[in-house]
Image (cartoon, rainbow, N blue to C red; front, side, top):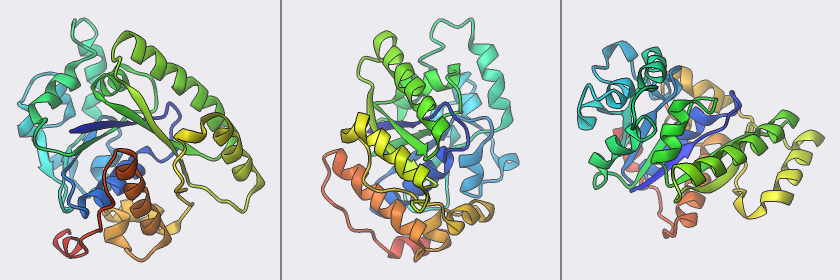
Length: 268
């Protein structure tokens, strides 16, 4: 089981969008995927069309030991993708865990129960280096960084890289950077191309070749509770996330896996 934290200390860069759409694209390649929504805003949860009021157990319950990890896992409605969902109540875990000795490893210990059941775990982190994010980074094998193509993102990237180094040094020596993926990109703009060039100059081997464009269909799909490949399989956004999933598999030493289009019909 490979655990990937999708993180960026800056909000609105496409973390949840990346988790939802990457998971769905891996799922139709017959990879067993678990999405862990560790953001109290719960965008990954709603991105799959999951009604939060109907969920019995959430990431809050998992972190606080109020339920078995298996009991919090629910079906996403997409082929081979499961979810541990989130609600605003998760914000309370930060305060409640402060005095606990194992506060940084609650998620790692919980996910250990599922080690043989999934190929990939994708963790959607909140937009800050909070105790929740520290839990994600302690549980993860690597960090995937969605990066919006704007000036302030460069500053945020530097801060995040430094945070990852601190976590690696003090908590999780195995933690690595999976890669940087550009999101919401408009390559017609000079600034976009400047940001891409600057990041590649410093992190060339870590930058994914696939660039996720600013795409209307990607923006629309969460309001329908469907990943882009289920919402509009023929859109440019769907194609980009499919190629991103292929590149991710390749970076993890796996052979190219053709998507099983029949699985799309089984999803909602």
